[in-house]
Image 1 (spheres, rainbow, N blue to C red):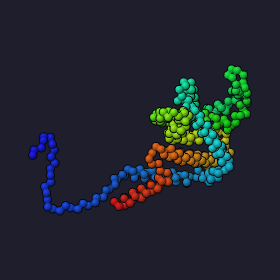
Image 2 (spheres, rainbow, N blue to C red):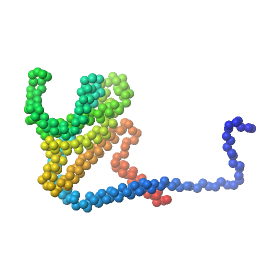
Image 3 (cartoon, helix red, strand yellow):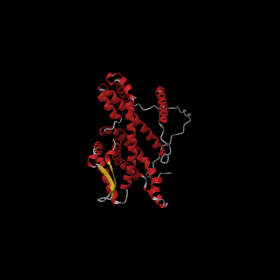
Image 4 (cartoon, rainbow, N blue to C red):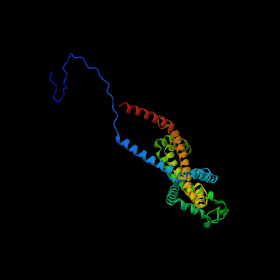
Length: 325
């Protein structure tokens, strides 16, 4: 029977009486990546040289580093740094939430005021804000609460309330609120519009929609960005030294002026303490993100211990494969 035109006919192998040969297992050879091994070797050499320089260079004075690391004066400065960072982080986040809600409000006045505040505080350097607040009493010796352009209900002396700690916390909080507002606003806008419509269709109050439905979902986007801001806030506390508050950095600066030969060990002490603080914040960030990822992913991100176990298992398996080739 003839095939219609345009039809491909596959050739058929003729029958044979020879027995079929048994199939043999073929080993799959891993792809060679010499560039990766060369890059790894170069990085290891550089890291080894860096560590060797840290341990053998007498200029670092590691004995003096050990002397200063847990000195009471350093720990007192560290405590002030933690207090300023904690108060500023909480107040900054609360202010950022209010500013973000104002920017998303339907009131043109609230939107304009919020936008102007964010624009101004993000434009002015933090050190300028702190110095302006430090000299605020020169502009306004007394502050009063009352009717605008009318009588005052009560007034108080600003210089008595504005201690160095208060000035530092207010300055950092005002600056942090401007950045936190954009982080919170971006997180709220990342929530799918269907969630807002579904909550409104159920007849839920606006406050309940925000606190129970919108904001928990927005936290998945807010958390990594705000923790990044929080790490920057911890480092920004070093500027409160310029408003006469002896935090960790300010204490190290003062001790360095008293002991000029220990400037480098004191800077290393400050560096290590800031590394410890930011590392602890990063650990908290990981577990907060992991908590809020439960409703968004099928499998939770592995913990650092789980990652280490998996990496060691993969490394052993890779070494066995390489040895078997």
